[in-house]
Image (cartoon, rainbow, N blue to C red; front, side, top):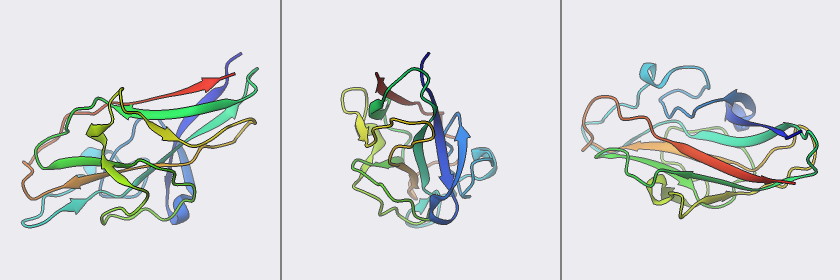
Length: 165
């Protein structure tokens, strides 16, 4: 029997409220339930505006017959989002949760997620050997420049993998 792994969005004080999610919405509120359409990041007349950081981690709820889960990786399509819109992510380990902010993120080394397609995956630290253990964090954020066009942006794909033994 295979392990059961959830993608968890961590919100609130010290990113301490965890919710199992099937997608990552980058938006103007710090929660896991409001739709992005109801909490879009507005274009400013001048400068950049930011979504709240989306703190994401993986949690093994049951190990099944596995002894460990390792080698967690995350990547996107490798394509830019839209003119004036950038999704950023930390490219190094963020192991301690802090309260998500809607100013430019300082969590880890920030990079454009478009630079991380299948040929440039990001490692997420964690060797999980028991039920309810979790990896370190991937911290996403939307950066909207004053050059962005109004309207919805296309849905983006985020892929992940891990090794199970």
